[in-house]
Image 1 (cartoon, rainbow, N blue to C red):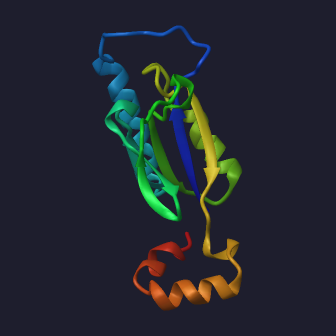
Image 2: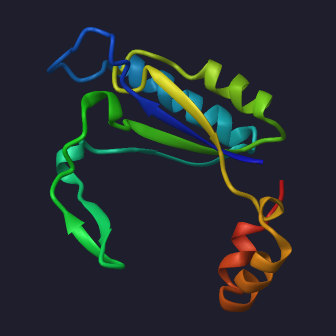
Length: 143
């Protein structure tokens, strides 16, 4: 089962500005990444740059259009994510509990299950297999 663990700032925590994280703190985060990699559960982990660098795309008249923004509140920012492949929700929670703290934009970890081939109706999977035969190989892989 794949889970995305999204990291975001705690909206109730005091705001900190300026100083970059210490070498020790960075090492703790990288050790966590290394531990997940060695355990065979880490698919990918990435940081997300501040929202002002991004863009928003919506739908208008049935077509994709660029929207103003992004103007997200701090509580809506995503600081980064881990994509892990584990055996259960409980195992995903166990990994999240091991995640270091201290950078400030990752105080809240939200664990979201990713859609799996088993989550889709067979008729939808048949369409996917027909029009995306290469992509479906990565989508339907099981641990």
